[in-house]
Length: 491
Image 1: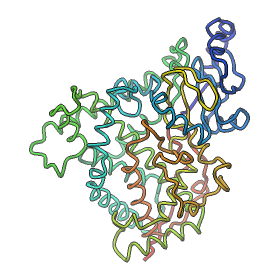
Image 2: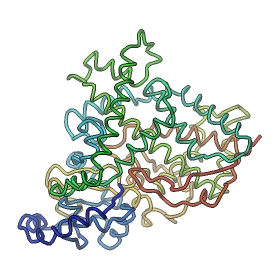
Image 3: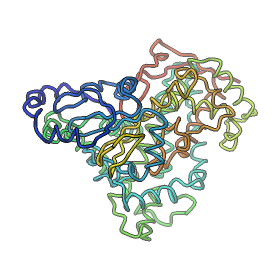
């Protein structure tokens, strides 16, 4: 999340001291006997002012003082911050059902049709059915592998595009975003769409999802979102995406005699709607929300992880050399490395695990919310508490990882730790009931693209900013500056 407080502070501080001693504020902070440690907070805005431009890093720093289980207050909302693998295990495994809900947040609710998607939906029967659709019909192993030809075709086109640059400067960041977008458009929607226009729409959507809504945390100041223009921007993007998705669905409805083998994800959702496979009507808004969910998770986080992997390899020539050697053996002189070879590339998988450890695409994951009072590591957590799990801090925890700030892919060779939600030292995609159902879909794209880039080319960084590892904050943490390279053919 990106937190901008100038407008908030300007309008809220005069009210803060009037409201400070209100009985409801005082009593809410002392409702249970043994609450987790808390940093000092200001009236009304709580700890919002402490989060700055990089909330996950600010919370990581605060956890060093107040511990891995910490209670802060964002406006009027109590928020539990978990910064250790033990705390994450308690939340996502031991008490998974209690913390499986999502808080009602204004921006996701507006964009995802009153949170009718999978990621932000309230915990309950609708969410269970929607996730079953994703797991059984959209993102099953069989379905993911059936789109292998799409991924391989798009990777071949990516390589061709770089080759045509003839060693001139190419924007590698832009290219990896393009290839992930193209794969997802073809898999989900059946064809590519106007690259620049679609990318602009998706970028604006992800930017808004990473924005801070005052009204979500201080309801009495919800008017600030209108004054700042945030509500207008959300409405505009929602309307634009809705019109786009409406056209996509109508285009699919008008298709005739769709071959089962050629079905895209919209085709599958429309079939589920026709056959009433959910047990209740699958409304058009639900289909739109689920498709939009797949794009949000499938493009932004996938391309972000891939970009960071490339950036780290360019900073660590020995690791790049090791991966290139593995790719050369697997490629055997073929035009591209195909998906069936990826399982035999342990160093490739180690590079991507290490990238996810250091650069969790969504560092605070999606917030959880407790649905009842619960005891957590000796602390009393009240019902209705929001939960941030600092996956980025957990991935860099020096008590769990040797040389925790260093990029060392070899730490994952002959190491069972994985990112699929069973090892709480590494949870870039969450875990438990609300873990990401599309892990395999996203990671196979990353593996295929990265394997082929290092197989086909040697890269020379162009310009100082290309090697700058500064982060740009949002719902996913991107590299601030694009990777500009000259790509030299390897053979």
